[in-house]
Length: 128
Image (cartoon, rainbow, N blue to C red; front, top):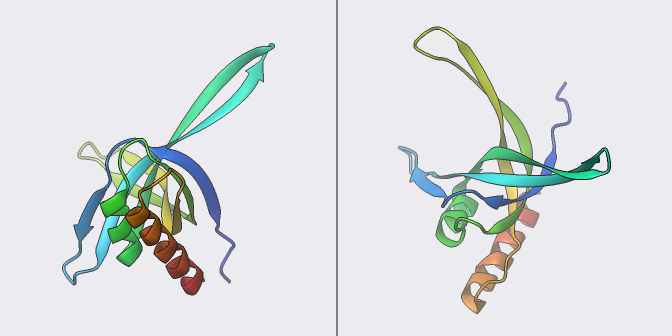
């Protein structure tokens, strides 16, 4: 039985996205976001930043590669995935990343970019 795995997160891109294509021509876009969280400790405001790697596939990946830039705000929905690997010294490593089903561009865009934003939202709704 499958378990429930859904994440919704907002953040800003830490760098420009990296758009690639697999051998069979499927688009793959990778980027990282910074998600800020404020809290108080002993009446003093603290800020915590969480950096998360993100993977987007297909037409939505192409749109992200074309229109997203470092510093832009996004709202992501997708699932968590744990990557595991072993380095040359034999040490085990792991990290959590987000595999996106939907990306909403939150910053203001030009008219052309807004048309692509609406098309991306329609594609996300159709996929769900």
